[in-house]
Structure formats: C-alpha cells, structure tokens
Amino acid sequence: MQIEAAVLRSPARPYAVEQVDLPDPGPGQVLVAIAGTGFCHTDVLPRVPGFMAPPPLIGGHEGAGVVTAAGPGAPVAVGTPVVLSFDSCGHCEQCLSGHPAYCAQFFRLNLTGRGATGAPTARGGDGTAISARWFGQSSFATHALAGPRNVVPVAADLPLELLGPLGCGIQTGAGSILLALGVQAGSTVVVYGVGAVGLAAIMAATIAGATTIAAVDLHDGRLETALELGATHVVRGDSDRLVKELVSITRGGAHYALDTTAVPQVIAAGIDALRPTGTIGLVGAGAREIVLAPSALSAGKNVMGILEGDAVPQVFLPRLIELWQQGRFPFDRLVTTYPLSEIERAEHDAATGAAIKPVLVPGKG
Image (cartoon, rainbow, N blue to C red; front, side, top):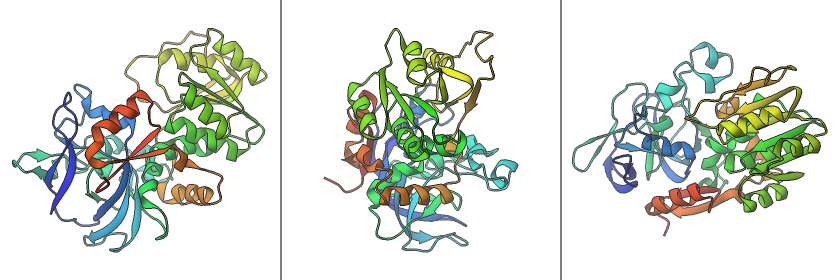
C-alpha cells in the first residue's frame, strides 16, 4: 500500500517525507496506522558512517497506533490499539528466560533496518529499495509493519499519540531502575544525563522508594524538571567537585547509578562516586573507549550494560501505563508533539535540548 514516510536518503541529508510503497503484512505481522512516534537519539545512528543500517531507511522505533490489517497468525486483531517496542526472536536462551532485550538476534532484528530477512522491505516512488524494519517497525510514517514480538496491546481509551515513547526511551529509563538495577527502597541513586531516559529513571527511582535521588546534567532546565519529577538533589555536570559533591549527597557514595550520556569521563566519575558494592548501569550508545584505573572497580563496584531496561515490553509497558494513570509516572510531561512533516525541527530540538521527547504525529498541522 502507499503510505507517507520520513526517509533518510543519506547520512548528511535531513529526513524527507515522501510516498513509499509498503507491502501487505506477512505471516504473524500487522499493519499499524501510526498515531504518534517518538524521536529518540538512537534514530540518529543511521547517520553514523559505516553503521549497520545504511540509508535509505525509514527510522522511528517508538510508535503507537491501531492495527488496520493482519497477516496469517498475527497476535492481535484488526482494530486493536498497540504500542510498538523492540523486536526479538522469541526462541533463544535469553528470550526464553525473560530477557528479550538481550536476544541473540537483537542487533540484526533491530539495528540493521532490514529485520530477519536482511532485505529491504519498502520501495520509494522512484523504485529504490528502502529499509523499513528499523526496530521491527520503522514508525516515522503514517503506517508501519510490526511483528508478533514487538506489539503490545493497550486499552482503547488511552491517548495513543502519547504512548509511543514507552516502547523504548521511557521503558529503558524506568526498566533500568526497576528491573535491571533493582533499586531498593531507602537507597541512594544518581542519574547522569536527564533527557527522556534519565527523567524516566528519576520517576522510577521515586516509585522504587529511593530516598536520595541526584540528577546530573548540563541543562539547567532539565535539572529543574528533574526536581519536579522526584529528584532530591541536582548537580551541574561541569562542576569541578562533581564526585565529592555526589559522595557527600549520597552519604558515602551511591548504591546505584545510571549513565545515559556514554561520555567516558562521566562514566568514570560515576564509578568513582559509587559506594563499595555499588552498581552503575550504562545505557548510552557511545563511540569512544572507556579507560578505567586498575583500582576503579575495587571494593566490589559493578558496571552493568543495559539494553531496553531489561524489560519484557508486553509485561512492563502495561505496568507503566497503570502507574501513569495513577499519577505516579507522569511521562507525558516530557512530550512535545510535532507534525511528521516537521521531523527535521524535531530532530534539531532533540539534539539541542529544546525538547525532551519529541513525538511526531502523522496528519497533525
């Protein structure tokens, strides 16, 4: 079918909305009319030279909408409202043990843009092949194909245009705290970088009952938002006393820390600001090596790599929605909506910090 989609034709060019031919859903797949899709930092990765998902490609991996067509054996019926999350194979050891974010096929299924087949799945008006399975969805579009493992049914009375970010960024921040790190009540937490992922982590730490929650960032506005959403302390990331301040705030070092920046110097400081046996989780996609002193992990300090919050989306996202409905997880405060046609402005605002979580809405404006 003919759809409109934001296509990245080359790393140096902006996304451009154009007519694209998308195939009908195959076995197990559904076609989703997109109500809204978040713009995430990960959507910039195809701009990196040599990245595994080269243009032309339709980005977008935080979609939500309504199923309009279903292939044989699809997990949900036409008319079902859904949030789209990451894809997984469903049969490797990690998937079977409840850790699909560490699926043996995660990178092939999500970060090549071509899914399980390894072949482009859409065509432009000029006949060129376009990758359209970015994170199993490619939801910078009016419609997206999704598979059985990345579809999460939700209630019909929810504002779908707001829910897309739950599928990746919000899930990553909240899941890192509640699932991967397992933050305990009465503990101390430091979050480095309070964009959408970090602010979701701040809210989750509040839900977990952490009594000291420190936010570190360079944007004063985001630090103010962190205080509004549950942080007990904020520290500028460029402070020349960063580690000392954090050790003092956490009364001897943090039990838990989460880095969303992927900046080696920040990660090193985060490790230094842990207490003995403390753990720091790393969720940022970095391109530089992290060099640690031989004694950095002494005293039982731990470093944990985290993907997608170690969540099972079909279990975790409904829980986050319920917490939001109770007023305990106000992720919607992070959202700024844009028409799909203004994706270039949304990308700019995300990069500069003018918007915390841009959400693209097809047909808006």
